[in-house]
Amino acid sequence: MRRIAPLAALALAVVAVPVVIAQNAPTVPGAPDKARVAAGTYAADAGHTMVVWEVDHFGFSKYTGIFGDVTGTLVIDPANPAASKVDVTIPVAKVTTASSGLTGHLLRAGKDGGKPDFFGAAPADAKFVSTSVVLDDDGDEAKVTGNLTLNGVTKPVTLDVDFHGAGTNPYNKKATIGFEAEGKIRRSDFGIAYGIPAVSDEVELEIHAAFEKQ
Image 1: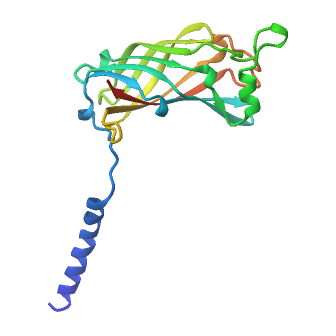
Image 2 (image 1 turned 90 degrees about the horizontal axis):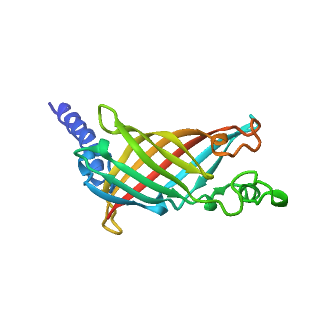
Image 3 (image 1 turned 90 degrees about the vertical axis):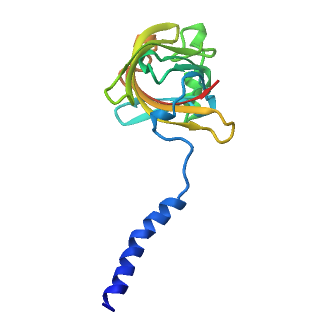
């Protein structure tokens, strides 16, 4: 019995340690809990919403850039999420890449007054307006189809969207909801065909979006 008692105490301690750690562990404000989503109109958090794009460069590597400062609205009702609407504007002129030379090329005017290779010196904002939302059986993933306007051309695009989390922003006390999305477009569909196929026509999109309740 004298030997068993210390062993039992040790076993209890081993079991208790993870519980104590879990109780003292820091938590984050958001969580992937659909019950936290409140119905209403949300505005895009421009500082924490971005569209990441990726193309294949010469078959050697993938090259990535970012559109930030996204603005717009999301209208959502947890009782009818398929009726959700999103309308966002992406400022193409604020495109960012890892190379100042490439960023300058993307925004360079056409030579001798000709057509720019990519977006040009004063590109119009891009815009995505949803037209349908189809949820999976669990209700935490959806295919969101909408009209993307880019470089003066409007085409339908479908995004695979995952619910990332919801909660209250501790700084401004606003109810916040976040999503991740993926999709693909062909830039030639939008009149941007420079360098194809050395620089891929297909553009992979990865979107990280946060919206704050108004």
